[in-house]
Length: 307
Image (tube, rainbow, N blue to C red; front, side, top):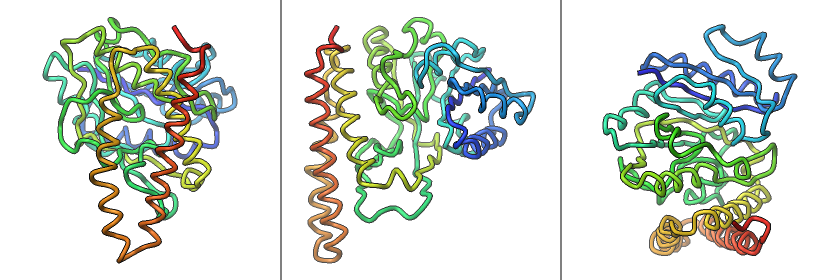
């Protein structure tokens, strides 16, 4: 079975990261792979890659709809595989990543599969940063399911979709997904919710054995980024829930329940031993929930995005 692995990239500043990501694909235990690199509206980067990449890699230049969703759609149109796999341009895949990613598709009712995203810190992890908020960094957070299980949605930087299901459900929405530094996110969440709506007899699975290591640059460990990203996530969630209001908020409710029943008691127990770290993480969690809620409120009031 041919598997198409798509990497979308837009900035020449990530060139070395992209090369690492590609190298990890050459080390995969599973073959055959079709590797597709989609450059998003960047002529300089496209030309540099054209001179650098192995001839076995398919390089295409998205000059159509700008942004991550547009580039993913451009890559899907070029792909030949039965399974379409996505990995971020600043991530490195474990050697058996593709093998584990496609294993659940032995069940014909599986439409999408996501994997485990582990942080690869550029510098040491900040003591104030709660593991429950690793989703801010594009990584799997504490409180997420830990075993092979059905989930509402996958994480966009480490996921796959059956091509026959894509043909039925359609493409990613260009109005959702990052465009440059604009942090409107959650295109994979909306897409998975659309799968549930249009293919209710299918499954979306999480396989923790499909592991990637996602780079966490120093800039993403700053409080300002944390606040901006949580606000953006809340705003994006509001837009998604407007588009697909019938699918509820059970995932978010389980997450908040985990914070209340697991995270807060754990931090309170840590206070006598390490008060600075515990109070810092409690404060960060409070800010994270607050700014996510604020973003959701503002997004809910944005009439321009209503159906």
